[in-house]
Length: 224
Image (cartoon, rainbow, N blue to C red; front, side):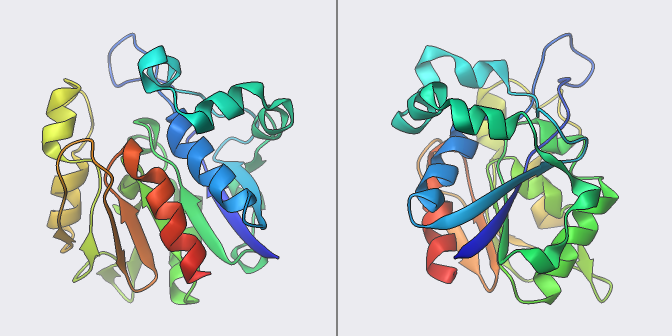
């Protein structure tokens, strides 16, 4: 059985506003079930361990999908989510791949988290898939191999500037995912806003937005 590590944010504050953030439920539930239903063993981790914060917006009726509805009824997975491992306690050698669900939270903590950065660099240098969707490609902001950004020269995608504008958070976020990927030397591309789109380049898989989360998991499963 293949083993995949899911890394979720521990950050719950949307910049200097009084609004809450965290991870986006669909971007966790959809890939989780896709992989688990295909006989992949998924372990959950976060910087602080325990219950990662859920972005309250992702629980609104407009953003419900079959996967989120399944999660809402799944007491076993909710219990598993409430007890994520701490990032510093997990070992890359125990897993075949790593997957990062999005939500705005990763822009603040995982993008700068040394344990996460080291983990991604180890997966990458050991030729294991690194996958991230929506805002989660933010985790590649500070990851390097032999002094070069991992995304340099790679085809990548992530939450677009126009999508960030649409949710009116361009001035709130610490950086724009699209801009960062390009500044780090990545070849950024995107589809229409809110449409499924994923890019695979070597062992790196990135998805543009919430609608892309299962597509990223499909790419990941094929790679495994």
